[in-house]
Every structure is written in C-alpha cells, then in structure tokens.
Image 1 (spheres, rainbow, N blue to C red):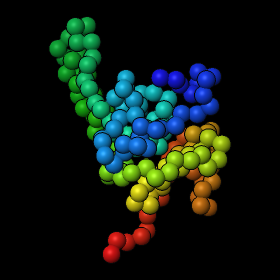
Image 2 (image 1 turned 90 degrees about the horizontal axis):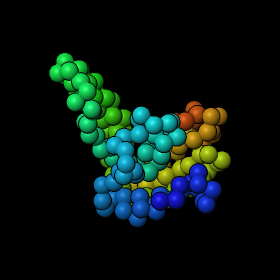
Image 3 (image 1 turned 120 degrees about the vertical axis):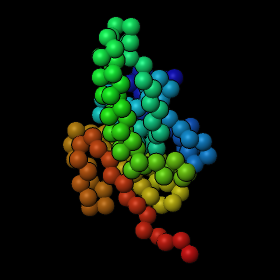
Length: 150
C-alpha cells in the first residue's frame, strides 16, 4: 500500500470504503484493531472512513505471572468498553453508503452519507469552521440529517 507520507501521493482516498461501506462491514486497517493506541490523526481517520473496530487480546502471557495475566485481561476489558462507547456513536453508519468524501479546508474533511448525515473531521492542530460551528483540533463532529422519511 502506498501511504500518503511516502511522497508518492498527496492524500489517501478511501476508495474501498466509498465503494463498499453500506454493503460490507469494514475496518480501515488490516494491521491494527482499533487506532486508540496510535496518534490522534490515525484515530480520526477511523471515524472519517466509518471504521469498525476489531479487538484482539494477545499480550505476551509467557512473560507474566497468573496475577499479571488477570490484571492485563481486566485492563483490556475496560479498554474494549471505551472502544465500544466511542464506536456506538458511528456504528449505524456502517449500513449507509458514502456519497461524498471531500476536503473542505486544509486538513479538514467531510464524509457525506446516503442518509444525509455528515461527519466532519479536523486533522489539524487549529480549530476548523463548518456551518458556523468550530471543530476543535484533532476531533470530529457528526451532523445528523434532519429529513424525515415519509
């Protein structure tokens, strides 16, 4: 995979997610389960691309006592709860098609879904503005569609 920071491309375009979101449940990365342990920009991409977390518990058990193994499993269980709480904000969007993915300002993107919902991600260390709202650095905001189905 060619990464945006390789110098060969300017930006990563989520082609797979644009084509298959709404049809196939997806996780934006194949190597990591949930990007919370990574940098804030990577975590934001998870929400921008309507990702689904994949959690695995695989500590180095052979280096741990049974008591340490139980502590590690307990800590990981709490982390899974945190991951779930964050994911449930966007989980329903796994069933929507991505209609549009655009850069609305330098380091700010908008993902528009088939139900009209928009997810705006600010990837910069400065506030971004959208629809009169200020979006804090390295955060996202969901704009729910207000249209009602007949």
